[in-house]
Length: 399
Image 1 (tube, one colour):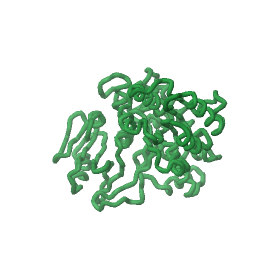
Image 2 (cartoon, helix red, strand yellow):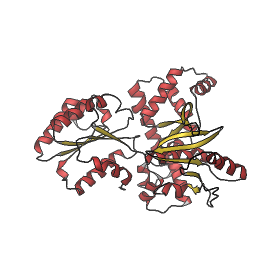
Image 3 (spheres, helix red, strand yellow):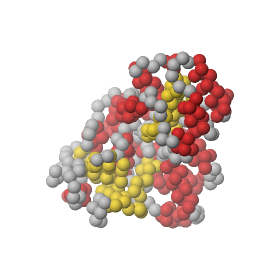
Image 4 (tube, helix red, strand yellow):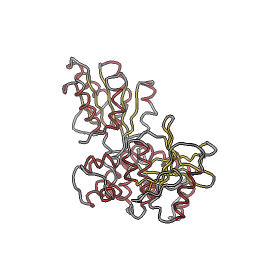
């Protein structure tokens, strides 16, 4: 079990505080392991094993998981036996209907420090926010970064293990054992199917599963590209299927809610305004694309862009796609007073590519850091703008 210190460092200041800690993220990205890591950290701080109550709401083995009332009674009995504060770890809590009222009641009635996980990005936009009124803090958990993957397998950065990361993605389980390619694809396909069925089709009562899968495949093949609902409707028309604009936007929201897709707005970096059209799509784990569609190495420019986007999110940046006159900046990333600009390309293979990638950054009239990130082994920096190999860029402590 690797220490995901990037997350623990963010959570630690809220430990033992009267505030609910909420960990959200795509299925199997490591949220349950995060609860174990939090437990280890609290024990180092003086907590005892007997103070922890773990409840996994995906389990069907315990009868008390069937309702809010029976679950509340189980927690009550545990807290009554304990003479000290109880650390309550509630895993995949969205599986329990009405869980918001139970969490609120536990906060009021017992001496507990509550940590919950869920695979729904919108779980905080509804009743929990109303009940808790600001007494919660959210931490978004993502699949392994390249750096975390290296820690898991105990290797130094190399072209060989970066290629493995390009194909497999970052789902933590895949780096516990040396799996064969077919086993990796099967595992990722199973996660994807579970997201489609449990987190989307069942939750939103979707009947035409085939249509949902086709639209999501359209998104998966087009990561790093702009999209419009109109183009999706045309795509389906070519396949002799019809769909309303409203349904397309509903499906987009469902994909976002399941933490599967990210849609990124554009910003005019010279005019300093957010543009309300032509968002780009990114996937929570690029390994899923290889499992479902294949061709990650063929479409390597898209995959590199996806990897950089997810790394920016992991580090807490708010990310936009930039526009400078008629040219595009792949990423404009902001965090507090910080800002960086990142161009991503496979290789600076010729002068035309060099000109395209550097010239747009040179147009931006500010002094924030700017990078051109590629797979080149020899740097081709220009006019003070560094060209970084993607492995080195991903492993930098600070940009």
